[in-house]
Image 1: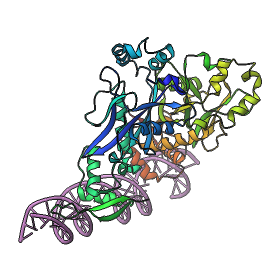
Image 2: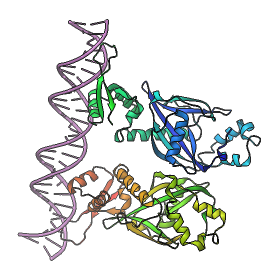
Image 3: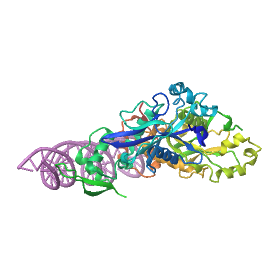
Image 4: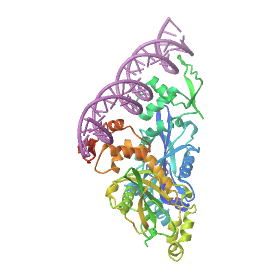
Length: 241
Length: 241
DNA sequence: GCAAAAGTGTTCATTGTACACCCATGT
DNA sequence: ACATGGGTGTACAATGAACACTTTTGC
């Protein structure tokens, strides 16, 4: 396997990505399971190349797991507690993977790299879940979408990182008009409302919600969407610009 | 001099502090001038010790320049463009300080430390300017308060860092009730208003402002403050808790 | 009494919420 | 025709901004 210590990365600095998607009234996060013995789930992470902007590094990490690039990303917090790495996680990982991560599998440089304390920059990304085909990379055993409310226990402080990312998503969703990044190109008003209700975990009044969204003046109203249902056909909308 | 490369610091990761104070209708930033040949002004910065939380590192750096600790700090952004260090600044610094920073003054390890690319975590701090006696540390030739609108040109992207810190101060000032951190223990309503007017660079209506602040329900009204002026004496207030 | 500045109240506009109603669609 | 869900309009409440008025202080 490739050890990051062999690459020209900044040491002890990592980037953790919370990739949000939305499907069928569920806010989902893309989470790989690590290709080691033991059930280790970890956010898509990576390191910063010496001559690379940190935003570019986040975009590169995202591209590796989603296949798409130039998606919406937002750097929201740095996680830098000294003890965030070594609360049982590392011991367990090394214990269960003596062959690959022990003295046989690694040299000292490699061992030092993974056992040192890391400061991690948290990014969250919003993607159209239909455009993403989750991709395993070398370190992954599998990768899947999980409902943000039913995430597996992840390594280190990764569950906290997701919680904080969700806080920031809620704070920014109106201000930065980012809700639409989670939807397809075109969408109905009901779909936006259900997205909001999922994100905030509370109902919104239908008519007032419509007014609020239309008053943003950022949507173009397109043709109607005929579903075959026995009711009035809803309009499709698209983000202007 | 002490080189940071001799300490047990995380490499290529720094912390930059924007220390805000307020005095006589001016929002001020504490800026040291570096103890090198050439006019190099730089935000109070430092590095993270291996077993130290990043918040603790910021607090330590702050304590070094202000003498006070446990002040209000907020981590607001990470500055990580690959080219932020080496736009003429480093060349100029090395050129003007061949004796101390050239081959004579430094070994290779020290030279590598200062010439590598840095990712910097930005913190801003709010202090009661009356409680701070600015302290030079070894690297400083001088240290002074500057009006945020009349800062000297600083190294690298430090002027941008201040601008972004000010953005975040404005965003958070109401939400996190942090305006009072810039004032003395007790203050008049007029002093709070002038602080707001300085921070936002715009006037506020006196009566509405008073109502807004009192409606926060976080202030205790104390005795009146008799200034000797020929007008009604204002009340003093203090943050509750 | 008077000027200066603090404190309070009242009105108007804007925004947000709750309720009611009409419209299109397929059976 | 009618059940279903989409779209719009109106009334009320809460919030915020503009204006007016009263109170206190030292000369």
